[in-house]
Image 1 (cartoon, helix red, strand yellow):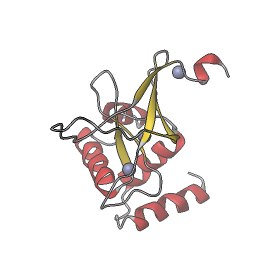
Image 2: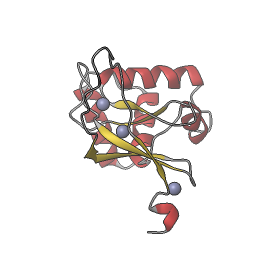
Image 3: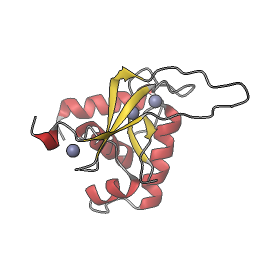
Image 4: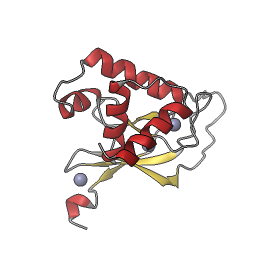
Length: 144
Ligand SMILES: [Zn+2]
Ligand SMILES: [Zn+2]
Ligand SMILES: [Zn+2]
């Protein structure tokens, strides 16, 4: 692990008042290195089963509570997670960007720079969550 990266990861944990554990460090690094959304079983496989599923799930929910990762919509029903921008916190997530699912490599990407439009629903519809998911082919798969 490169030193600068380890510093960066430690800083994130510190900022969110999380104790430094091997699993948290490793998973943050993984999120950092892969610019697409990850699934719990994907993480488990990428780490060669070094950490068990329970630990991975627990770490993901801690990260989500702290504003480090957010859930990413996916059309196959499996929950994906991706890194938040630094403006998310323990109190509030502010990930109002759209996501893109590549139908060739099955990766989901956060398009942080594209804000999802704010729509007002008809009276009586209480919104708990909303998702903007675009489907198509990512730049990598088009060799762009
Ligand atoms: Zn967030
Ligand atoms: Zn792709
Ligand atoms: Zn996202």
